Length: 112
Length: 117
Image (tube, each protein chain N blue to C red):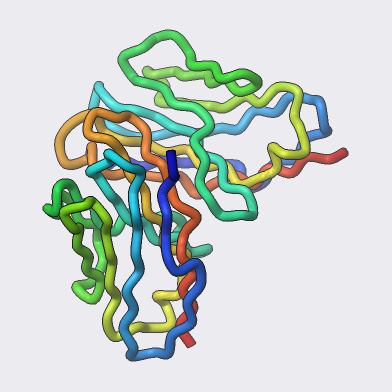
């Protein structure tokens, strides 16, 4: 069974640009959540989707958005990039009744 | 809001010895889950062990075991017979069992574990 797949693995963007990150969950998993990991703030929850609906959102500005498709794949978008958005973005999937979340390898975003 | 605290930013242990990583959490809920995740240099978060709050028995997975003290809100991880491959960043995490909190993990700041050969 394939794990959680995140693409791309690395991204370099310029301030003011926008970026889209993709996450394909484990087959059968309908819950996808996103986290931002930085040395200063640690791991912070961005949002969670289940069956194409955002069920929960963390304390991030509106520049951070996401969506989920009918096949459970999810994308997150960051508009008007700032230097402080440089981080590792992790995606995790969970089955409907599952206890644990399974993580992808992350996308390393660098904003210059 | 729930918080998770790992008070040891770094720990080191000799290969084959035992090490214990500490984690405390704050919550007013009675039903929740606790996890230890490992993040090696490859960056992928790997689940090490989980504990359901309603279970009094401490979870064990091979060389990994936890000491879950619900009243003290403490959840430590013990690694026995440490191996070089155990070197990683270890995160303690909390998830509510129901409600909106059930949709997210709350992480501690992590403990970097070094294994000395």
